[in-house]
Length: 304
Ligand SMILES: C[S@@+](CC[C@H](N)C(=O)[O-])C[C@H]1O[C@@H](n2cnc3c(N)ncnc32)[C@H](O)[C@@H]1O
Picture: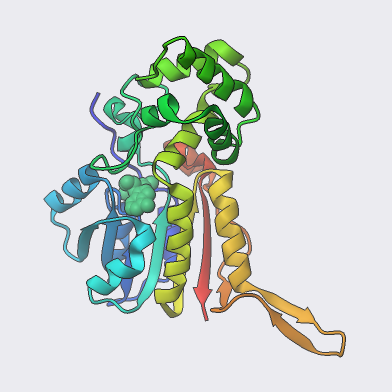
């Protein structure tokens, strides 16, 4: 099946929140098919777009968009990449985290339990361990930890132990269907979500070190963002959203009352101010057109 086109989520809200100005420099750490980046260029911004997926990069390069410089890399390295590009600071940063629709829809990428394909899940297929390497090779305790911390899977221990037992009987998990059917057989179907949803999320995050990348991108982003520059992050699951919320809150900080009277700043430098008090979410019309936007949350701060 041909990969579906990626529909950028919260597009208008994101470019509005970035307060794009003509000639401004914007770093997109998750370029994908350049949906958001193109909107920034349309408003007069210049974009440095980073992605680690060769397929996405090739498509954007083939389209030859003026105003977007395309770089293969990890957004965890955004400071180094920006400096190598001659950018000491930037006017805005965007991270639209997670997988793109083409990654999810192409069975061969191995991201989805809805399509049978190799259990891969690497965004950058030129390096690193696949999900199959982890499922077939990590200890039962290691798997439990991954399922619990990155998938927030309440049955993490049960699933990890069952995988360990199956491996002991000579079983190997090579495809997405192997693993999805195994988990469904183990815990059955309850509720609207496939019982393998959280395990697949956990494996994807582990394979691509998504939490580590996010942490480095947030830290680095605050370093190179110019005063008055905006930092916008879109997340799709509670784990990454909580990380962004906490990081932004720590930088926004607050005034703390002192016992001796007066107030003192309580937060980590560099300080920032919140652009929106709460996360921005998609409205019913966007969710109707693009159901993937249902779980999207956009948070934005401005460096002061
Ligand atoms: C949701 S898509 C972004 C879509 C994009 N905003 C658009 O409008 O087309 C996420 C993209 O980020 C990339 N990505 C995820 N983690 C990354 C990382 N740590 N470094 C670089 N790219 C990453 C993925 O390969 C994917 O192409």
